Image (cartoon, rainbow over all chains, first blue to last red):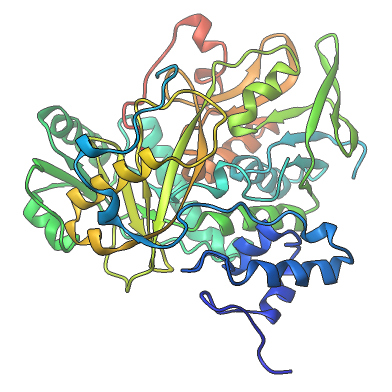
Length: 100
Length: 381
């Protein structure tokens, strides 16, 4: 079989997933961290479903793949300058609570 | 899962795993490490990987000198490449107080054999291309500090410990610790109980909850600490850069990404792990002040982890009053990753009575009652 790409951003192949599984990384959070899957520019939009299917196949059932990696901001890569405006224009105040 | 063990380590983060690995190397393998999630679930998998010897007390400088030497060997020892890269650490001082602090620290570090230098903003610009020199009074640069990739550090220690005979149990949550009088008898988990008389509390931000299971109150509090990562670039940034005015730090990973965070004085103690827009704005503002060219870089992702903080910024180690065999190895603030090798080694030697070290008395829980507090002032991020 030729090379089967699972994650295009980070060039993770099906062989890589199998290797990770053999190393004992048998949940999606760990597969992500070991292979780099879902940590590139698309942040997992293209590859997490493939990895979940792979895991469900090996572990026999959907349960194994039912806990996808935590989705994290940002929705899409955004330039630093978009958030680096003057403090006065900040969109987010300090959280209220017990201070150090 | 084993139903009995000579010693149970609660917390499969880098501190607990380093201890397990070092205990096993010294011959104690009847050990179970309990991790509530996957490996790297807690702060050990959420930090920036900074490893520095620039500290303000001789003790921490010496500990970190040893940790650096251990990190240099750890990739070949464990079979996992830690990507430990000694590109240095560059601290920026923007006011008189910070500059005076750096000056005092550099003298102390030099006496301890750490080659830190005070350098001008112009010289710093030659180390960090594009650094904005305006507003910076002086910098401290130590070329032997560095950064590593946290995940393989955790996995490497876990595998090395397991290969020597330690049981590392992931997705296993401790629900109770039972004692009879002063003596621990068992650790109860959601996957069964383990009979034991010795428990190490290496649970990081969850340590205070673990201690409460035995009626022990730790002063530790968890604080959310946020971090972000930008798209990868060709390698251009050697050192970790840290601005003392707001606790910003960032470095370039071996994958080329710019990764860093900063402290937030308004952050309350909590178990909150969601990301905030407030952090994103403050971090982006600070990054562009330090290195204006970063403004065009795109942020890919942000996340959060915990600092397990103590009132004096030093860890809680060793025994506690009232419960025998209950050993603390927590309260490492944002420094658990870099201290893990040396702490694991010293704690293993201390537990097996092969060697003593004054930190196990000086930084025990009882110091807060005795009033013997010596604050480490050089906590960043």
